[in-house]
Structures are given as structure tokens and as C-alpha cells.
Image (tube, rainbow, N blue to C red; front, side, top):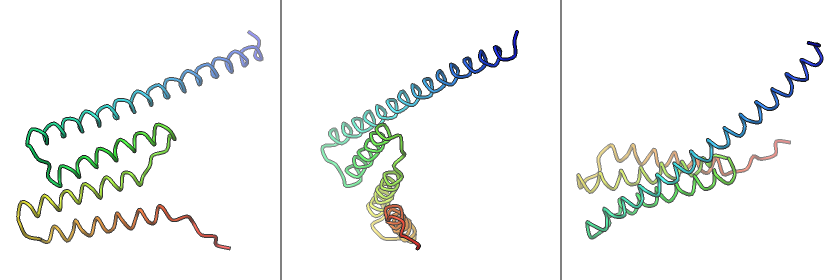
Length: 140
């Protein structure tokens, strides 16, 4: 076999394998996003059914629905842009910590040192959203 012909055959095979690999990665990406999105919807519906069966929704339950909403929005943004919206993750963390504070106060009816730590974590996350959101300034 001629070396130049072998090189051409090798290049065609490599191009075909790269295209197939990209197709498989993209297919996995879409299937994974669909599974994650469906799981979020399923979990939110289940949580809502539990609230309906209780006959009421607490503030913690409503915050849980907001967490599901943010997770769904995050999947939608990632699906459209292929960029992970880090701010959405931070919002989910803030909401989850707020739920933790509310549950702790409802259970113990007093503010302990743990509430101070959780509040500091919420403040740190809020500051980080501002840092992420702020455009870089011109240095010169």
C-alpha cells in the first residue's frame, strides 16, 4: 500500500470517527438533559401532591417549589446555550439554605449558632452572585 494513499485513508477514517463521536456526545447530552428535566418535573409534581394531601403548604414547601423552578430554568438555559448558569446554582443554594433556616427556627423556636453560620453562608453566596454578575473593568 502506498504511504500517501494510507495517509488519505487514515484521515478519512479519523474524520468519520470524530463525526460519529461528536454525534454520540451530542445525543448523550440531550438525553441526559431530558432525564434531568423530567426528574425535576417528577419531583416537583410529587412534592406538590404531598402539599395538596396535607391541605396546606408551609414556607419551606413553597421554597422547595422555587428550588425546582430554578433547577428547571437552569436545565432550560443549559439546553439552549450549552453554558452552565452558575448563578442559578447559587440561587438554588441560597434558597436551600433559607429553607434550612426556616426549618431550624420552626423546629427549635430559637436562633442558635448554626443560624449564624447559615446566614453567613447565604451572605457569602449573595456576594458571589454580585461578583459573577459584575462586568470586568478596563485596567488601562
